[in-house]
Length: 394
Image 1 (cartoon, rainbow, N blue to C red):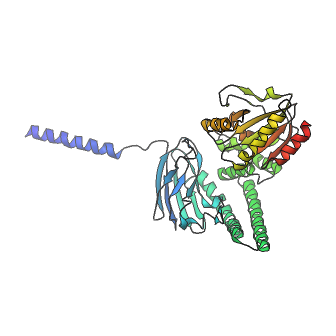
Image 2: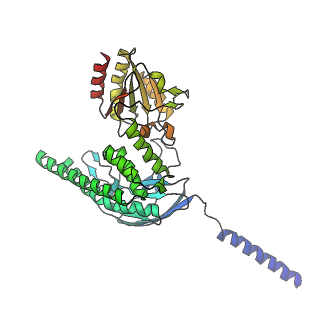
């Protein structure tokens, strides 16, 4: 009898131990969770995880939505802004994705936005009718993002709706009226954002929006500098602050007449060292481009023609953003574009040339004189840049 009791106790103890192991299974310290409900949502969300390497062919990660309810978890290495989007091909989403005649307007109000970081527990609540009227909460970072998105999403949505209508309209007078009204709403929204920046110096959401507006050229340089100087130094250790700071430095460093920013790097296609100082003595055309950028690719034969015609006076420096090394190498080999190429790396500040030069759109071209000073910057079509080069080189 004693033996039987002893064995039973051991067996029960073992059972209790196994059960306890299951109950005390630990959550990974770098995990974040997202849960809540977006009423009226009929599609899953998709996003590009900041810790993963993607090509344009790589499928995105999925946040599953069931009857509007979301319960999602994943691991993440650092504080990141996630912008999740719905299925572009789902016809039920055509309203809040701003489908236009011939395409769509990729406005912020079509995204679910939240800050993710190790240990974050993010709540989402709202609806999806005419736009993603749903916002995050659960911590100071996400509360700040919710506050600024609640302020700006309705304006963005109203403006986008007008622009969508304009694409279907045939009457030129009506089109002009719709576009003008949209511009007025955009300006009203811009001013509201600037006021929000001033009133919330500790807001991470506001800091992200400020850098985004600088990048898109939606704010004057002097205003951007003033607003950044108002940002709390409590945020200065965050990557978002450092990115905005680099943009601000880029505004100052790439003004006309300034020495071109120092570039000494191994971010070349063959890994060899390149120093922009070695190009002094000739004019330099710096061309920020990407294979994904139609206007960039369209202009490259003309860039090649200038390089060949003025090879004794002009050096071309290409700076690619957004393409893999293999893809760049194949593209330039197939087309005979044999000038120096650098690869901008947004994860590495010294080699993040797009941010350091405060590039706001693609293509962007800089003309540098033989003394190494910036003559002019051109954003978009390069016709004016080519005209100036003709003038300088003849």
